[in-house]
Length: 337
Ligand code: EPU
Image 1 (tube, protein in one colour):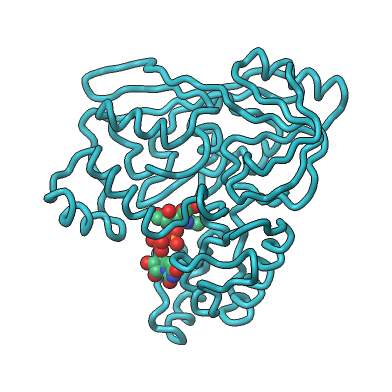
Image 2 (spheres, helix red, strand yellow; image 1 turned 90 degrees about the vertical axis):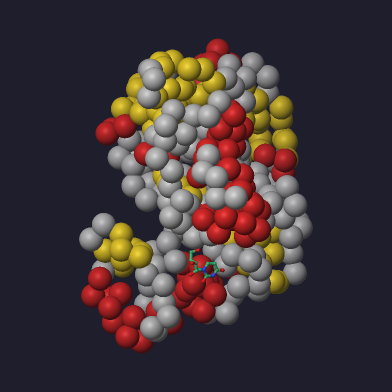
């Protein structure tokens, strides 16, 4: 097993925060993973797992062992005339996995194009975009318990998927290393193009021709126009979840703020956090090295060399102002470490 000591994690998190890790091991296969887990158990060290580093905000030095997951591989495990089941190893780049499917004309992931991060991180927060969530295609998740080293397959119903939520963020938080994700893709998919600008882009750029590739390309275009490219500006996508409130509160807010966008969400109402944040004057706010993205108020950005705690403080100020103005409590989506 390879360990690098006192390494900066700058290149391993999309927020581009320069925090150190005391020990870093880059793993490429299951054997190396086992060695790392045996090492932390034997030496009673804390474990920090990094996939694409696209949903974390580092605020201090990381002690213990940091594993950077580069376990790759995608294979078809079952195929019929209707569907294909694929198993992707967790260290695969998520978008590379989406495009692998798009190129083979397997449908189901196209709306989730260009989401940063790895396949292994996808089920943890049940990634979602443009009307589709991972849970719609995910059959099962293969995971290894970090202390007992026992393998477990979490079937779909055991994953407790919810809006940006799963068993891996709740009861089993920190207990498992996700090794692979198995997904069912369709050969003749039903397209999901109701959300936002998808139809507009399909009409403008793709002559209204519906295909897996055209939808993927349209989503890529929309995301590029709204969301900052982490290779250019440090960020971790949506910093907050969209709050879900009781219908009664939503009704009284609608009377006060007739323009407030609202969506039915199960038996409650979901409000776009970006709208609330923008109304409080934060969109495009900048304080030196960090701020709120100019095109999407839900995204906090590190322009250069910001400290994680500055961004946490900014998020606290945003939470406070939204709370004071709308009496709605925003919840962070990004993991603060
Ligand atoms: N809006 C504003 N100001 C803004 C941006 C948006 O008022 O600056 C309002 C508009 O009313 C707009 C609505 O918010 O119609 C929704 O905006 P958008 O379609 O951009 O989506 P979102 O709810 O802000 C969610 C996900 C994104 C995902 C998009 C598209 C969460 C926390 N975020 O954002 O996911 O890409 O929908 O499906 O659910 C991520 O999780 O990192 C992420 C980027």
